[in-house]
Length: 243
Ligand code: GLP
Image (cartoon, rainbow, N blue to C red; front, side):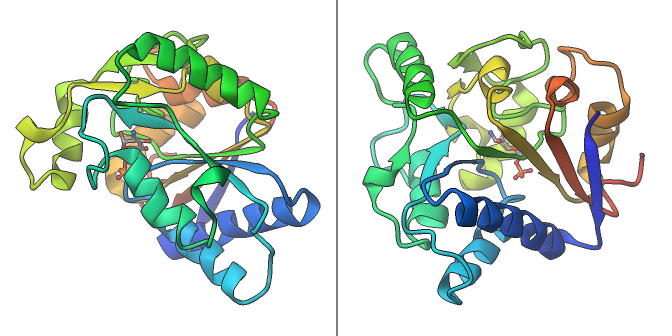
């Protein structure tokens, strides 16, 4: 079953997950860390950066990989997930782009880029720890409700709700939010050795309750964590309020 850790606030969630990452890197300096975008994981990256700066953990051999990506944003767009992960994770940790892997959202042949990324993750030895956020509809990565629980990295169409949720990164303008994305599939995500989902705030409470206590169902993609042998959900009091 899914292990639930309730923390007082987002900063404490960031600290506890950063410590899990640091602990992993102390044991396995070249570990492959899967990172997520959105606002929720930012305290994790800040806490890990602080630990590295304090000499608490050597992150110099860490490898970072991306969970998902928008399709069709121009290269270098500040809100492409590649740009976000470089800015929020790779650069603050002092890593270079060679230690970073992600799907190519501007590929001519998107299905081929998806298959290639799925293969690259496996060839890199698999993800050691995958950090996840959760959408208000229970999505992980960009696996919207009804995604196959066995899915591999592939192209998906975003729901209107997810585009509305993410419009804040695009000047609040939903029309600027891409319709299509590449996401690691649920089956791909489940191959990571440790899954850590962080959710904070009341808006995530229902999705968290469905994830942890609801039935295993493609209607709530995050419920797939119930199938994983080592899945941890870290929630603040507000996100835990319906448990
Ligand atoms: C996007 C990302 C997800 C993320 C979700 C929630 O849809 N693809 O990986 O979990 O946003 O974002 P936030 O943490 O900002 O609520």
